[in-house]
Structure formats: structure tokens, C-alpha cells
Image (cartoon, rainbow, N blue to C red):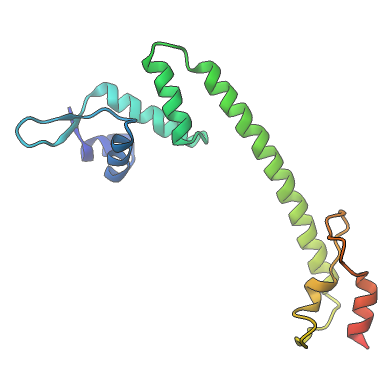
Length: 156
């Protein structure tokens, strides 16, 4: 039987994490009859290792709970594991695509601003660099003004 600290050390995590997972019911602790210390057996050590590995793969604690509940009922959690991971992969791909578009817009803006002078707020404008930028990727709002027109106004 391992104490909270010993279990944390064995699994490469913190005692706080072990206590937190216990409070959530992800780990099943036993209490020492003499001092009420939380104790964990080998099965709970394996369970904690599983939880930590699942977290490394991006599973949320809610998802891990559902997976553990399947296993505790004697049902294979593998279909759920695959389904969840596939959904995470699709979400990540969308996020990566969004970040790549953002990166391109940022680089385009910086390049466009390279030859533009700094401006002073005048009550009608905060920063003409942002206000005159129109991305090439079609991500602009309908109220944007042609940057060439605005740029010429600032330079005159």
C-alpha cells in the first residue's frame, strides 16, 4: 500500500494531483485504520498511470471518467477511446488550420506595415496600422477601407 506522496512519486506526479483525482473519484483510496492516511494499492497505481497517460494523449478528466466507468462495468472502453481521440484529432486539425491562417495574416500585416510611418491617435483613429490592414485571405469585415486609400491619406 502506498501513501499519497509515495504514489505520486512512483507515478511522476504531485501529491496534489493524487488528492484531486481521489476527490473526483477517479482513484479509489483506502484509509489506514490507525491514522486515516489515504492508501492506494497496486491497482490504483496502475489506474493513476492510465489517467496520466490518457492526459498526455489529450483526454479530459470527464472523458477519462467515462472510460474508467466503462472498464469498471467490465465493458471495453476501446470504442469510446477511439471515438474521443478521432474527435480530438479533427478539432486539432481545425485549430491548426485557423492558426496557420492567423500566422499568414500576421506576417502579411507586418510586411505591409514595414514601409508605413507610425501615427498619432487623433480622435478618429487609434492605430492606422491595424485600421488600414486588409488581409489577403478574405478574412476582413465588411466595413474595412481599401488600405491603399487609407495609407495615402496618412502619408499626405
